[in-house]
Structures are given as C-alpha cells and as structure tokens.
Image (cartoon, rainbow, N blue to C red; front, side, top):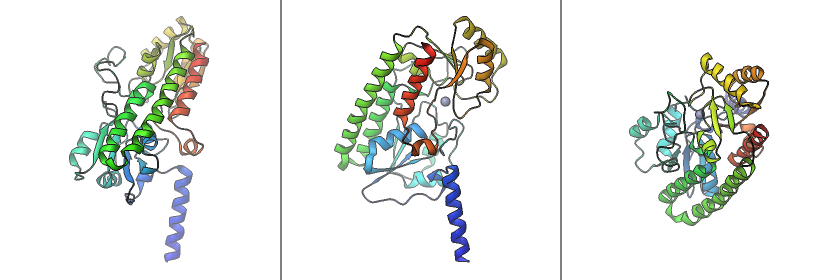
Length: 307
Ligand SMILES: [Zn+2]
C-alpha cells in the first residue's frame, strides 16, 4: 500500500516537472532559519526578488510558469503560503486585483508587503488610448528605468524584514541597478536612430517602454489581453499600420497570434514576438532566461521592426 502511494507521488512529481506546476500549488514551504521566505505575485516580481535576495531568500512565484497572470487568483494553498511568508512582493498599480482583499484577511502580522511599483513611474504618466484614459497602466516593469525603482522598493522591504543582512541586499540592489542602467542605455542607443516609431502590439502592455524611448504604441486590445478584440479596432489598426508602413505586427507567447496574423496579412507585414514578461516557461527559466535576457530579445525584435 505504502509502495503504491510512493509510486503515485513520484508519478505526480514527474508530471509536475513535465507540465511545470507552481511550487505554490503544494503545501506551504518549510521555513529555513536564516533565509527569508518570499512570495512573489507573478514572474517579474519573482525574478526581481530572486535577484535582490540572492542566497538569503527563498522566493516562490505564485502564478504557475507560462500562465497568463491578469485573471489569476490565489487558491487556499497560496493563502497558506502568505500566512507563513516573511515578505510578499507584488507589482500593484491595479495589476493584482485580489491583493487588497487578501492582505486585509491575513493573520500574518509580521508579513512585510511591498507594492514594487510605488513611485516607480512619475504620477499620472499612463500613456493610453481613448476610452481607457482613466485606467491605470500597471505594466511598470517593462520600463528598465522603472524596473530599477521596483528593485529598490523590494530591497527596502527585504532590509525591513531582515535588517541583519542589509549589506547583502544593498549590494545585490546596486549590482542589478548597474545592469538595468546598461540595459536602458542599450535600448536608447539602438532605438534612437531608427526611422520607424510605431509599435503595433496585441495587448496594451508597452506604454511605459514606448514612452521611455519615444516610440508610439498602437494596441489592438486593452490593458489586459482580450479573447476577442473589437473588429472595428482591428480595422483601425490595419489602416494605421498600412498608412505608416509598419513592418512587423507583434504578438506575445501566451496569446494566440491569429489577430496579429490577420493584420500582418492585410498590410503585407510580418509577425514577431514582443514579450510583456508576464510569465516565463519553466523550460526557458531552466535554460537561464530572465527579465534581462528577455528584454534584450525584445530590443532585438524592436530593432528589426523599426529599421
Ligand atoms: Zn498585461
């Protein structure tokens, strides 16, 4: 009987490795003395927290790898994890719609919760299109400059939760700040001289990135990916893309390329991937991909499209 159970458990583990289950799907992780237990609300928060925490923190990504996080909500196991955690890192600016109610219901009084996007972009700077002008754009992490500010906020939270290791967190923050400064320079130097300025994307995630580098985002969908975009909007984008000689229509890995293909076909453009970094597959993470490397891929894609 016990042997059968063990075999079943081993099979489940193998299945999990194959399809990429989130570590948060199981029971709350054991706490390790001397190590911060950090819960991160989705991939970029997980990546930033991992970079700041180094070997002083165990970071759990709450949203399973490869899953679209806009509509995700925590399950009981995730809440149990938050009750045990030392730090909770979330982007904020309205991205995690569940945060206020969950934080209000937790009994964990020592939890340090940090809204990483706080102060990371100038107030009121939410580049948008008509009809969505009132909604805040939460995709702050896609600006390398704002990502640096988010990491600063995360480092401050780690210091608050674990002041003994302040020097470690400060050193990690400073090191990654240099990397993000370099990334920002790479974007500016590569994109500044290019003649084209229009970036046609599916979901409106690249406002801060485009604002940083003087580009014009043309989005088919809204602030979160829609299953069925408005045909009138698709027609508008086709007209604009044709008039401005757009060469590449972008889509993202976790969403069907169908609409991008229709637009590309109509205007004689190609399709390409621009990642909003809202998730990253286990395979890609295992292969060493992270925020920095995917942003460099985004830069290469933009460079090719705008030349
Ligand atoms: Zn999004």
